[in-house]
Length: 346
Image 1 (cartoon, one colour):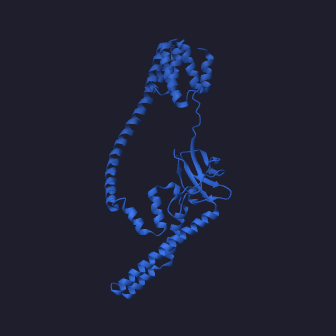
Image 2: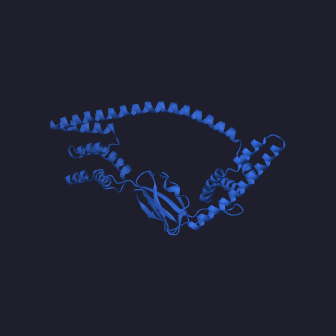
Image 3: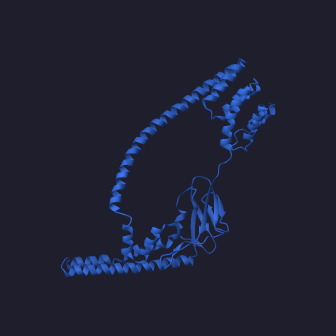
């Protein structure tokens, strides 16, 4: 093999291409429920600018789709902008996201539509709350009449019942949550449940929840499962500690034996004992078949110094396999090794 091959190979060997993680997603308006509880899907939004915190930015295409180049598996959104639109949930800019093969969905609305949703939702919840307060007041009236409550107890409970600050906080929080909800993103069960709650059909909502089974029994099952899992995690942790210790010892042994082989190689090089150099180069290569450097050094020596082409091919092919897995078939280093293998095989 020509000397220039090896000079070129050394200059370009093991060039690492920067790995990039691409998060796909789309921007849309929120899905809504009509007066009959049927879903009205949102529409995709083009021309929205999506910016990562300390990272890449992009713009949604005609179908609302976008691709973000992530600097890490975990990321934050710095901002999402589109003229005439705002985020339905500003909290998306505070959340930590993790790369997913599932699309990242960002929901936006016009300020007018967002305010309309907020007001309509608040009206519905306030109406439901008023009904519940009247119903509870009637129950307290009945208890007072049959002397189950004293007058002092009655008025205390009435005062608690109409605690404006408490009710105002409840209405505000529920209104915000339901107004920001994108109904495209929830299943049919939750759609129906939200419709019942927002429209004050609480008996139907409770019945629907009960159709999923006995919550208390399911909680007991969950707790039992959690205890069993914790026990298994304890056993797994002990096994992992033992495995980690064994792996560390294996790595130390590998490095130690590789260094001894390297020392042998250098010693026999100075003594000009080429067969012994080749032997320990090959021995070191077998210590870690995935170490491309060791495979190539053994292959190169057998190829150039001893012209032992059959043995050289063994190590070239090991190196080629690792290069293809790491960099792909089109990488210059991969192609250089593949060419040399073809030359020897001729």
